[in-house]
Image (cartoon, rainbow over all chains, first blue to last red; front, side, top):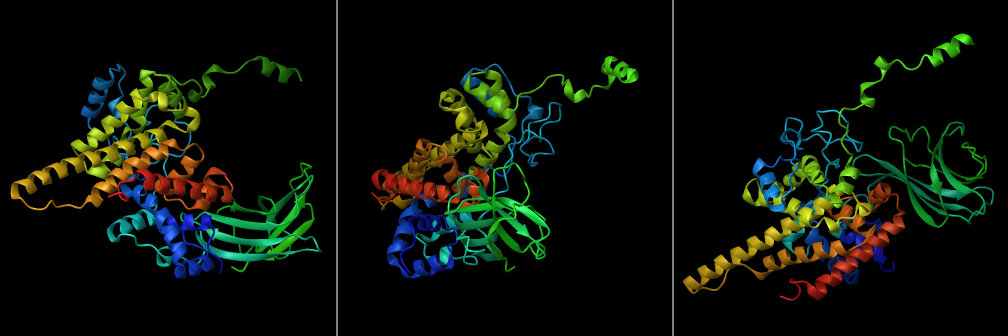
Length: 259
Length: 212
């Protein structure tokens, strides 16, 4: 096994799980581990819980604004009843939509922020305690993939000598979002594009998942609630730029998800 | 036909206009608050406080617990942001994200100040007792490096800064960052790599930990 790529070592420094082969190599390679350790110093300095994105709202006491007004000399003033975090709805996180124009907007003005996960932050905090605690044990935590839990995979085999092939896998990220990662090897197209579909085994019902290019790994989000058991066939088609959203019928690669 | 025309020319019935279409006092959206903030509109500072002081104070309280230190951080965040508003570029990101960045600096500065005070107090105790100074230099180094690297983040352009902040501060994987930003996975990975190299270089050149 050759050394891990520089990008994979950077992901290891962020404590993302690596693909199994990279994790195995890292486990036994002092040179790669030293590189991870040197990149990880910056991670451990900054990725600490106290600097993480805000996760809860606490209304500051009125004296805080008074001091700000005194220091800046501004004559405007916030309405105390509107300061985000005041009132019973303090912890409500609003969707990223324009605030309603009506009153009662205390909750709606809270900056929308996703609930913070703790994998990296807890790991970073632990590393600060135990010192330079790195190595394969710190990176190969999950099932041998680098960005979530792979729940299904398929080899994409060429159809009718198309010359297109590749890999696809469904990764469930923390938070439940599933993405279809497609790594396609295929010739470039002059006037058209490659589109990925999930199709049922009868090849009658299908869901368009997105557009891919040859030679570039793409992660396509999947609709929540989509039953992969019902649509187990990953299909790559060549679509002309004709404005017709339906499948062209020209499939170039296909594989069956092993769920 | 005549009947249709008749209904059409009758005009809308005023009493059925939805009230939401004629708000009594429309408030600007977050982007407009950001633009007005950058332009020095005092009302925008008050709006920013209404909308984000709770989140920022929540960060400060998480770092220091409720009390004077947290309140100082929140106050200094808004004062610094207002006096330094020329440094806020609305086209580089939303105002609340920029305010969170300012707040991180204030938290790190407060750690550094507390650390200096602690060292001064310990030195005084050690001198009084003629004993070796307690407390390792590593603690000081970590505090100083945090200030140093937060400053280095400020020098990053977009999208590098947004990418590394999502990794560091929102704990997203590179695939999640790609999904969130719409950037290709390979682009996200190479930016992460280059930014970590840059932070490493900064630590090697100016960092306290490696020099002590």
